[in-house]
Length: 226
Image 1: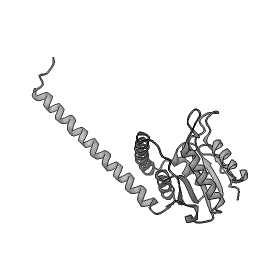
Image 2: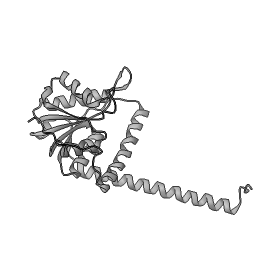
Image 3: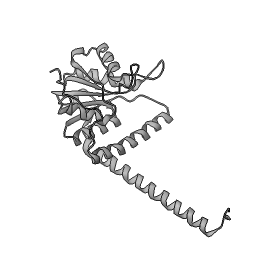
Image 4: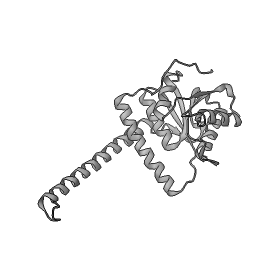
């Protein structure tokens, strides 16, 4: 039996739904505020725009992304990130580079693409280490310490991503800095998607901190080439 629009029970249900939605919205804002505050507290002042601002005698960690945004169209975030990593190597600030990313299939292999591109940019192949199990930023950073034994990192990515990665590293007890790869001009809608994706990733980061999550894939330790 349908209730009339002004029925008291209907108004009560609508009011309850409104309160639930308001509560969820406030909780969401609270979680986001905690995530942003935690990120900036750990990474504030630790991310730099040029290699010369980074301290020497570190290990570089280059975070993965797709080489192409779609078939035949290059991802300029990838290009700028590799250029920044190559500049970091040539500055003499790092002893080697770990390229860490997703390797979900034979046809999609971020570490392989990063290594090939860095070699083309003049980085010696023997100074590039591939981490094929960096399926997310948290895993890439945690594995740099747990698998490769790196306790002093310079993490290379675009600014917002680098801030989050440095926050993760410092939470895990790694002495980390970031090198901000240049941003690339994108459409307003793409910029908004990237912004929202990063906000969600920071909330997920807080969950990883609280749960003390371990990387999805571990294994035997591998020595770095230095």
